[in-house]
Length: 450
Image 1 (cartoon, rainbow, N blue to C red):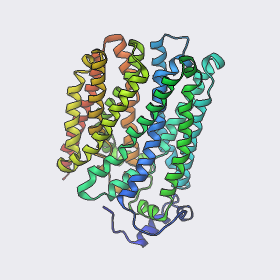
Image 2: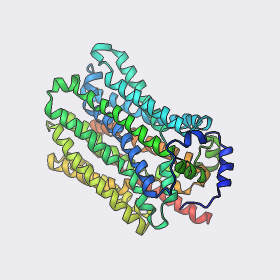
Image 3: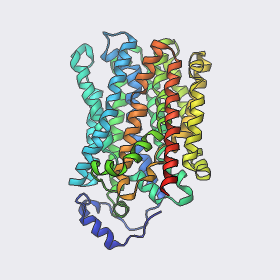
Image 4: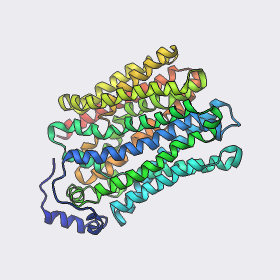
């Protein structure tokens, strides 16, 4: 709930932080109260555009890049190399968070967001125009890697603080509901990205798809970035949003100071959501690569099954809001981590069970993902004191993605192709166990500290 900080206190805080320039913040200023629902709109817009970028690259890594940039390797090795480049963005993301928070501290939040989304747009458009290996040789791989790092840096820099603002302004009895709203960006982004690729695969020959068809979703991603930039700037530059962000002390703090004071909350927060993030890539990216390598199944048809699954994910995210407000967000995460652990035992049987088994894996996996992922963000970052929440929430999310999801397609495909699908299930099980351990430690610390 919003604090009752006085205007004079807010102005004093603004004077202490150079990034809160009142001139830029008064653009599109309007009078009136900002409701949690309005903040939620900004969160959904921002997350949907980010996830669309994310899934366009992820799907291309499984279906396109092995042939376009690694034609000299076997299909398996080419896919593993593509997944290694895919992981670079997750390594670069925390670096981008730290670097762009320095930009915000020196200039403004609006300057940081504009620069970050410009870097994202340039990196995404660069991939769309990148010549393939046959035209540019090894340099095509080098440039692809640089552009992927650029996407990761921009992803970290695009943190706008709106999810934290939403959490702080949500009514006490509806925090789970408002927490899940931003998570709806994931299924929205996936449906659009998967739909574009499914359309291209259905209507183009394999030659045309690998020549130019795969580039079209990247053009669309660039256009969506531009629209999202103006939509998000219109929100964060209004006087009312600026007032709320400043009132809640949602400004960056030095990372060294954060880690000295809040390192345990950062680590526990990252590990608490590990089950959700590990499952995230095991039902989205990994199955596409496995089907491509081991089956004659239609890729367009499989993408359509995933789109049905992600619809179930969206429903699960919404349900998670109701459940969390009744039984608690941490208990919800713990219960879902247990169910994900049980599900991990059935991974090899389902994926090896023909089309019916694969469809069951996708539909059950997406359903569990929605229920869990709906509350994965912020369940433990609420531990942060207000002055650390802006930076703490961003770095916690970065580390959760890096540890839980960044290497998931690479590890899952590598171990499955060499040792069997049971090891992909073991990887997922390790994520579930880590989440349960982190939630248990966090609960013990909370009891001890009270």
